[in-house]
Image (cartoon, rainbow, N blue to C red; front, side, top):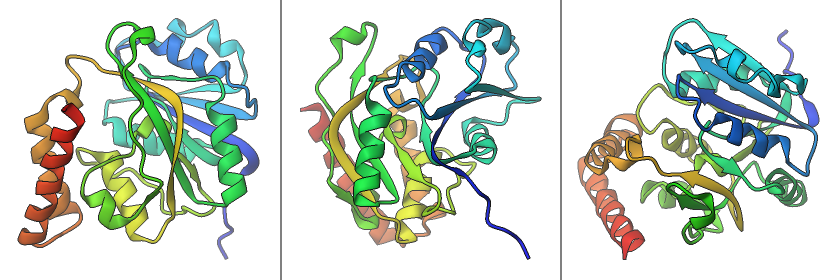
Length: 254
């Protein structure tokens, strides 16, 4: 008989994929090291980089809570996150990309909320910035509770703010498709997982000119494929959600 995996109840496992570009990774890691909540582990998944990631991080790796997992070949961010999830020993999973930053009390406040409410997944508000983190924009608006239908109208969840209780979300998995995090949240919501938003502004998202999210036409095509291929929605229903996607995008920029 297979036994359920055992996780360290108080530990938060932070998953950080990285591929070649390490310009900002030290800042990202330091934002984890400076957390007021101390029971964390950071799993840096090197997705087949040509650069020597471990050498670049040598001083930081003196912290025994930081681990580097080296993949032999690049297979994409979804696979890297899944490898990190598999390696994680904490009950709670959080995600932080190698160019983003958390505020010092992010884990403490989010975990406190989850333990109090006993919800399976939460996300928080955050701010976007381009070059100077001190010039970050306004906090991203948050929906208090996210349902499957609401999430189909547009991804309102910033991956860098997510925390998941894996005892309640046993099916946590990033599919190997574009918008992998969006599809993962949709699949969890469709399975009945309760997802709550916190208005607390706890993270900073770095907007880069060459980022995939900056290509709106590509993002539009990917969203359509999420509706039709991943979620297998009928044509008319998919078109209806695309209208919501357009309107939400326009409102964000007005």
